[in-house]
Length: 509
Ligand SMILES: Nc1ncnc2c1ncn2[C@@H]1O[C@H](COP(=O)(O)OP(=O)(O)OP(=O)(O)O)[C@@H](O)[C@H]1O
Ligand SMILES: [Mg+2]
Image 1 (cartoon, rainbow, N blue to C red):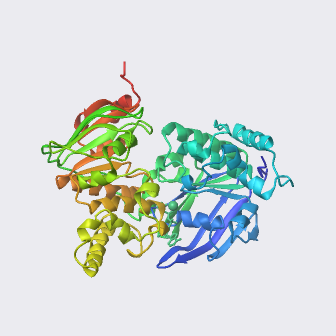
Image 2: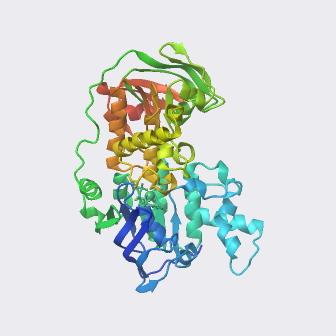
């Protein structure tokens, strides 16, 4: 591995960076600097410009203005190749789309070496390839077989493989754009070890995350952005978390969770003996009208699989579901929607939004039937006004409803995925980790929307691995472990410790 580790620290500096897209000034005169051997947190609300600033650094755009300096010299970065030659590597927010699925881990890691030639040789022997890849993984203490196909990796493993690939090339600065959003607690710890190791070897790490507490575990310095502008840069230890939030949002965050007065009615939704080969185990549950029922449990407990089974998105699931006492026949998500069940899925970019369609089209897609049969012009204007309500309620940051969803920031794409189900008049709403990857202000907007649905008498099933959300928003919860329900808890009579106990299978015996 050729780390350009250097005894001397090297400074990377971005000066007065500006870039615009149609209708958006994404960055306005932004300054940023960091050094090798340090880890730097880049923080801001959804759409603040974090990913865009890092894309400029990684050579994804050529139409920005401003200067980039490395080690006291001005450099010119207008293409990914320019950035790589300067030792700047980036692992983007959408890990899933970067690895080549039907190539092995070894091939994926060594891909660029084989394309560009390694040590002058343009063809690489298969055995050498796996050996070299293995050396890289060993050095980073990443336990993944180099022979495994990329498509068989978990998200966490993909993340690790991508980092390994980045640092296998000349790497002075490594940018990690929200690497922990899909990771479990232990996977996150593993990633943090890796970051410390890289730091000690002289790599400068730039780290973007919406999980503020974890910044304090691994970051030395912080830069905060708001609305495409630089706000403040300091040592992280000098800024408290509350202050970080205030700088991000431009105002204090009062009351993260909405104050609710639950008005719980009759049983609305019932599921009996749901099974899905090894992933969901004999789950029986019910949700009343106006009730928010949590599905608690750690990452990997089977919450997503259960949600998908209830929504007809698994072909192998068995069991029965009922709505208002009537047995449902759900064999596909289409059947589920027809029956009055909506699901906001976890893997939103892949399943939740159409990136090549506009915000308006996405928001109204699920409820199209409501707009048809009335003449096209009427449909269009109704679509617009309904969509604009959702854009406002969820604070979706977009110049207007015609913008392609693929051009929104990561967190705002998530909000679109949630928003599109709010126009569907369903009886049961299933949310699967709805606040993953969204900023603290947006989280509050989402909790408000969920609470409002419940207040309108809807039944809500809310899956999340965040204990604080279980305590903050639900009336009652089922705690899952290993595909099964370990315990049913009433929120007012439990606490995070008890949820954690059952989430880890604590009282199983
Ligand atoms: N290719 C593009 N075309 C049009 N607009 C864009 C493009 N890329 C970014 N933008 C806009 O620039 C702004 C900043 O987006 P960016 O992705 O940098 O935000 P972010 O801080 O990374 O947010 P998140 O936390 O949600 O990932 C957003 O308003 C976004 O819609
Ligand atoms: Mg981003």
